[in-house]
Amino acid sequence: MKLLIALTAVLSITATSAEWTCDDCTAVVNSIAAYLTSEESVANQVAILVAEVCPQVETPEECVNGLPEFWPRVAMFLWPGYYSAEEEWMCAPLCMAKAVRDITCEECFEGLQAGVDQLLEEETIQAIIAAMSGDAFCGMGEDPETCVRVIETLIPLALPALTANTDEAAGAL
Image 1 (cartoon, rainbow, N blue to C red):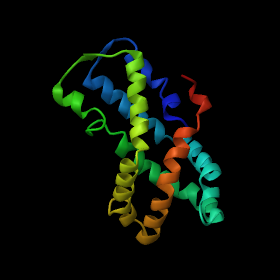
Image 2: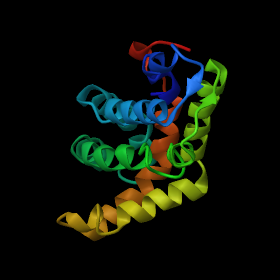
Image 3: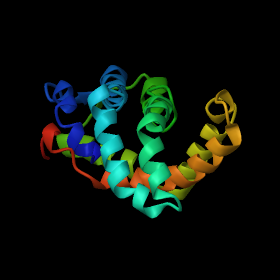
Image 4: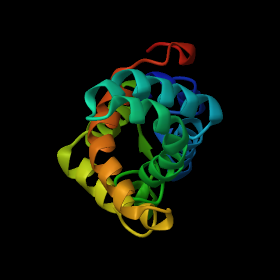
C-alpha cells in the first residue's frame, strides 16, 4: 500500500486552514499510525508481503505460513513507533517551537512523501531493525534469536514492498 494514497482522506483535516500547527501535525501523524494499525490495513499489508516478500526469502513456504501471524505484531510495534508525533522526525520541531506556519497542500504532500522516503533510507531501516531486535520486541517473544533473524530479513524487504503498492480503496492523489 502506498502510504501517501492512504492518507488522502486524513489530510482533509488540514484543508480548512493554510496555517499548520502542532495540533494539525499531531492529528495527521496519529491518524497515519491509527490507519496503519487498523485491522483492515494490517490485513492488506499481510497480503502484500505474502505476495511480494515471501517469494524472495530462503524459505518461502515458512514465510507464507508464518507471516500472517507475525506481521500484526510487527505492525503494532513499527507503525506507532515511526509515526509518533513526539519524535524528532515527525512533529517535535514544530511543537517545540510552538510555531504556526503557513503550509500549502503541495507542501503537506511533500512532507508526507519525505516521511516515506526517510522510512526507506538505509539508516532508518537499520534503526528499525535494531529497535525491533532488542528487548522491546524480539526480546519479548518465545524465540528471540529466530525473531531477530526474521526481522533482519523481513524489514528491508517489507518496507519497500509496502510503500510501492497502492491501496486503491483509499483513493488516489
